[in-house]
Amino acid sequence: MAISNEAGLVWQKALRKLSEAAQMPAESFPGIVIVSSYFAMRHAAVAALLQNDGKAPSAETEIIARFGVVVGPEGAEHGRAFNRVFDLRNAEDYDAVATPSSDEAAGACIAAKGFIAYCSQRFGFALPAQNP
Image (cartoon, rainbow, N blue to C red; front, side, top):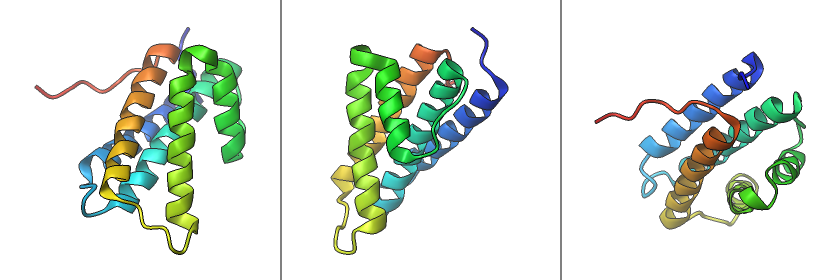
């Protein structure tokens, strides 16, 4: 199935956010890594839903829920990872006392990489060429 233009554009945004998360040192900037990891996953999920359904919800929790329905048990691990990184991102953005650890940030980035790889394989999106 050909990738729709809108889904392709949102997918490119997901890849940019993942690149930001991967290039930022988690030890120095855990909050930025978490937020960028979350948005990489969010944009990948929206691209997947656009590709699968022709539309995507706008509310964060609805995106997560619909993604889980679409991928079913096969993608449940990635749906749970998406939800965990969403919780980390909410704590980073909205909890006045929560301070993310570098381990949490590194874990969020790893989860985002796995999520992007899964969405690429499951929905037919291209990944950037790897540098040797």
